[in-house]
Picture 1 (spheres, helix red, strand yellow):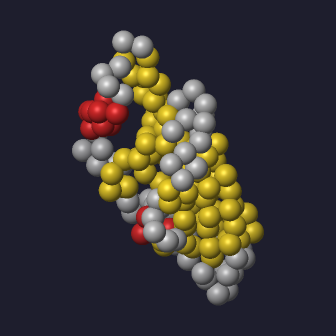
Picture 2 (cartoon, one colour):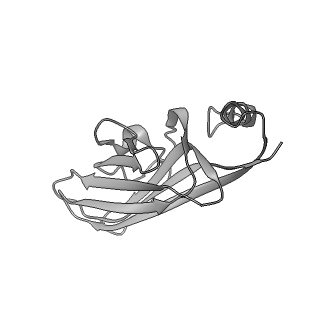
Picture 3 (cartoon, one colour):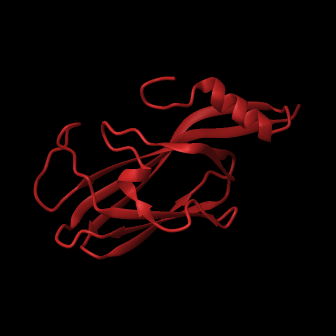
Amino acid sequence: MDSQSSYTMQDVEAFASKFYAGRQLLLTPYAYNTTFTALAPAATASNIINIAANADFILLMLHHRASGTAATSSTASTKVCPFVRILITDSGSNEQFTNSAVDLENYSTNANIVNDLPYPRIISGRSTLTVQVTNYDTTTTYATLDVAFEGVLVRAYSA
């Protein structure tokens, strides 16, 4: 186990192998990112992430970083903790990742707080993720909110 994730490369390789029936796999570390701007109090916004057509994606962890309306600099000890809820829907399976929107700080990694997903999630190639965020802070507009989806691209080859 390393300091950033509780999943080792062996864990990820074994997980992927179970779903691809012994085919040779190429796993490539990858991240998808989406940025929300000017997220006002009580506002909801949605972005779409297009998953590559030539590979599935195994999601291992989410990361986020937010900046408020005031000029701020974030370090591990003085990070912006956004009052934002997130709901992610996978168009490939037509499933939500959670039954309702969850607090971003409880679901995603931000600076020195590490939140792994409880179990890796396979997202089919050629699908999309709809990422919806809601600001439940009554006074802060988040100038930017970046959410990164960290994992591996999986390409399966004929045996």
